[in-house]
Every structure is written in structure tokens, then in C-alpha cells.
Length: 190
Image 1 (cartoon, one colour):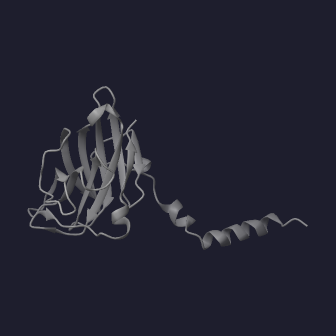
Image 2: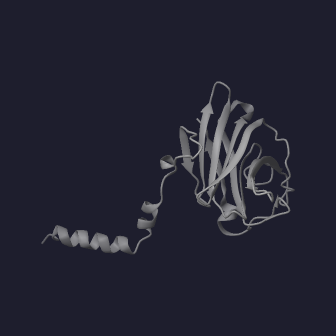
Image 3: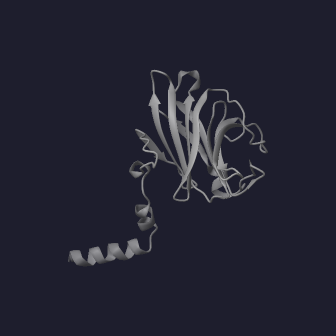
């Protein structure tokens, strides 16, 4: 004898009430985000860790990409996103970091992650970076930048990170456990 449809629906609703699926459905996609600065990006990807997303416009004719990296953060913390042209991990990455300066303004600049204890000081990168800025909207830090992509390619290793402390206008070390050490992957700007 077949199970009546209302029993199947009731069973499905019961299973869903105990599964993580409803929380996944409740999360919004990066494609639905509207920037307060009226900037528009043709592509985006929800990154798998730290609640972050990357929005971008790739111009193949100039081999440049305009990006907006967005992640939840308190006003006391910092966020960073970057590319690693020669490896897959943090060390060797060329990044842009953002945080609130002690004068109360948002600051963003490029920095090199040349060790597991980088200085996080402003530095010139191995590829051109322009139009660097940041904003804080709805408890999220957003970094904007335009990068000149190296080697004529479109696929790169990327890293992203967040830390809870900025001391004397220098971002301090992030957690070295859990999702913080998993925040890396590849991005294809095509």
C-alpha cells in the first residue's frame, strides 16, 4: 500500500527540522549583495570559510581585475585578501589588508605575507595594485582594489583572513586553528 502524500510531506518536514539544511538556505548568496558605494561587479563567489565573499570584474584586454572582498568583522578587527602567485598557502601571498586606524578612519593597503609572522606593514607587491580603499557596512569590512594580473593568466591561488586585534595600527596575528587555517583556495577570474 502506498504512503499517502501528506505523510511523506510530514516526514520530509520532520527530517528537515533536524538537518542543517534550513540554515544553509537562509544564508544569502553573494550575487544578491548591493554595495553602498553603488559599485557593481559582474561576478562573485561565496568563499567557503569566514563568511567571506569575493566580487570582481575582469578586463581580459588589460589583464586587470577589480575586486571587492567582503567579510564579517567587528570594528576592532581586520580583514585581508590576496593572491599567492608562487604557492598555495599564506606565506608568499600578496595581500590587501583593511582595519580601523586609531584616528577612526578605515584604512586599506597592500602588504606582503613573507613569513608566518609578517610585519603587516604597507609594501609594494609583485604586481600592480591601484584604487585601494575600504569601508565598514553592517558589521562587515569591505576591501576594494584593482590588480594587474601577472603572467597573462586568469587562475590564481587566493588566501583570505580575519583577525580580532589591531594594536598601534598594526593587525595582530589571526587564529591558527579551525577555519582560519582553511581560508585558501583558487580563483579563476574568467
